[in-house]
Length: 143
Image (cartoon, rainbow, N blue to C red; front, side, top):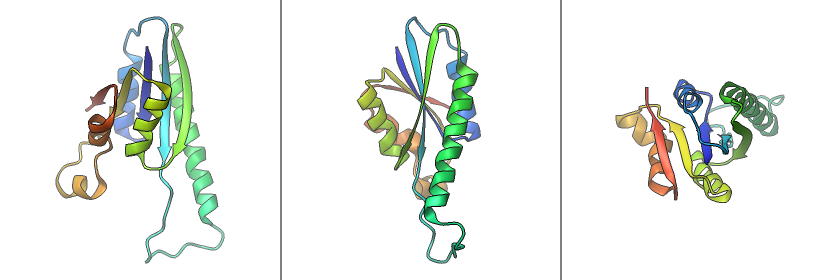
């Protein structure tokens, strides 16, 4: 079985990691821990210091994503489970679905932040979009 675990370093991701870790996956199974880095675009009102260029910010975002995907992989590691990590850049709503399609995942596991109302409208729901567009099963882990 091929499981794509999409995380973003949040508490909601921690619950999804714990859920994957707690399962007795069939042999052979592979979990690919994926984090998607959204390109940083400063608001018009924000002043970006000369020493902090957009490339520096992007590099730090990728570094942080690599760190927490590696940490998540170590948390779910088990003798009967192959664990891989990956970091992509772009909109998480599309990148998660694209990564699952390219890898031919059997299941996508994502956490839910549980946003409602205006926050959900403004920020959008990654988990909702993944459920609507994925070509495989999707499990949304809520706390």
